[in-house]
Image 1 (cartoon, rainbow, N blue to C red):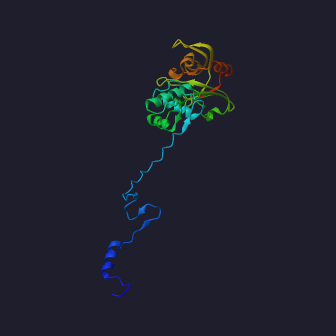
Image 2: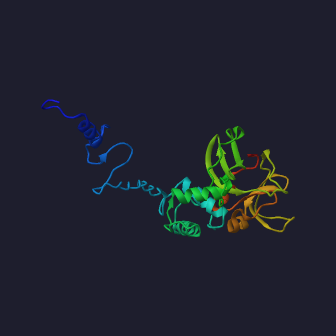
Image 3: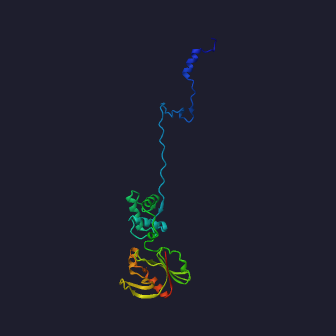
Length: 268
C-alpha cells in the first residue's frame, strides 16, 4: 500500500457513513424531497395548511321597491298564490310588495331585506306555479287581444274572452277599450257574430230584478251594460251571460255612439 492510497476497509466505512443514495434538496427551502413532505428546523414533518374554500358570491338583487314591470307582476301573482300578498298584481313594487317579500323571507330563514334576490326568487318559484294571464291581471287591465278578422270592417263591438276586453272599432280602428266581466260557467256569454237590436238607457232586468243601465242587447236577454257589482267587486263575481262593464264613463260614451244594427263579435 503506497502513499496516497486509502485502505479498502476505510473506503467501505466512508461509503457506509456517507451513504450511496443521492439526496435531492428543495431549493426553495422545503427540505429534502422524496415523498416525506416539508420539515421544520427540528427535522420533523411540518403540517400542511388546509385549502381555503372561496367565499360564495352574494345573491344578486333582481327587484326592489320602486321598480315596475312584468317580472314584478309575476312576483306579486306568485306571492298571492301562497297567501303572502292579498292585493291584485299591479306591476309596481310598492311597500305592500316589499312587506310581503319580507314575510316570505323571514318564514324561510332568509335575510329580511324586502328586496327580491336570486335566492328568494328561486325559493318562491319552487313553491308556486307559473301564473295564468288572469292571475297576472286579477283586477283587469289585460292588454287587448288581437282583433278577430270579423272586427276589421264596419262598426263593431269586438269582445275577446281571452283578454276580457271589449274594443269599440270603426273601420278597423280601435276607438276605445274597456275591461269586461263575462258569464259564469253555467251561464256563459254566447260566442259568435250578432247585431245590436235594442238600446235601453235605464234598463232593469225583469228576470233578476237588477239594474242594467246603458244596455245594448245583442242576443236574447244578453246585453253589454254597466254593472255596479263589477265596479265594486271586480272579478270576484260573474254575470248571468251579459257583458258587464265597470267603467261608467266609458260605457256611457259607448252607449251614445253605438247604433241599432251595429255588429257584435264575441270570440275566444
